[in-house]
Image (cartoon, rainbow, N blue to C red; front, side):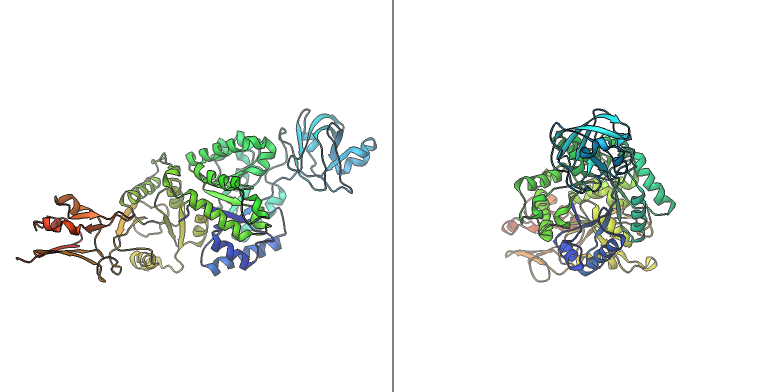
Length: 560
């Protein structure tokens, strides 16, 4: 089972029901809808297609809308501008261009009204993702003189970055407000806030949703140097973090991005906040059928650093091979996760919270008993988020009767959502309605253990996951020995029977037998078995029979 999750951006290459269904089958967990492009009508169609594709595949996926945030751009120009290294130009609002005829041939128009006010002498001004670079020299009335250190071609609508300036534009713009209200009406699962700089940016969005009595998890995109400086206070109010390496590289310099990425992932792991690593992870696959070796290493290293989620952008939105990209991403993650020693074990979780301590206990019990699955019964998903941050070695099944919770769990590391479609809380039989369904998927054998966490009383009571139980599967068809699950060893004096359908692999028989007649298999399940070459040493003292808690052992002496 792959633990880390995959977000894929939907676009022209991947927004039909059939295409989305193929992406889900390939390993997509969360679909990203980028509000920087398209209309509400087109976004509504894509969201509808996601839900339909999810039903078609039979697997829940989350939907994350990504708000555009404040965009500082050039305005439209009739012909491309060609500033050269060492040349001095001016930048200002489009409406002021005619006021400065002396700058007619060197005027850069911008749609951002506050650029001149926000700028200061010596500040860097970057164009087109940093491909062109200039320095602010001095203000001249309503424009700013700038000198280019790196020239090039400037086209209409290209982006502008002001990494050294305190940009006054809010992180949550009026367009973002309209887009968020639209998305809330579409029952999306996550909202990503662009260009976060301080905790107040997140609190503004939370306050708006609180007034609407809606509580969606907020993903804070870290891409501004101010956000890196304020990361501790941002972690105090956000639900998730995204290391958005695109604009971050432009703002702080690509050479600093790897260290910042590792630092933020480490902080998120310590604070138990899920973290997403994004931008250009498999960029070359936008056109090519395979990634570069550096890209494969980039994804694997993000997994080894402790990221919960990796994200694809243009690779799936506009690339030639969207399904192949998701498959490749899934394969790289699975390979990176093969050796548990390479995973960060986040064993410093705060156990003062009862719910968290139960999740940690369940994880440790599952690990020590070599359980096949952890079943966490949850209504809000909070229990699954906590156990996810502990990084259990055992795969987790998040059992819920809430479709919204199931979709939110698509972002949780190591957790597979398990939605109970038809649920009557007054007539709920956990053994019948959940355990039997899980056993019937064919991946379990007798003797397999399942660790179950659930609350007292009604199983889906919110905030009451305060019990742990180990369930030993013992009523499946026989899988060892004979057709009825009986392993038999005999000589001319006795027969030893081991009913593998009820054996709990508790090792009591091994501990009390001095003759080495009982042993464990060397496979992953560590099942109890009979060392048939040693049964001649058995003294038929029946101590192993007495110590067996499930009655799986029977010794028949031919002299009795």
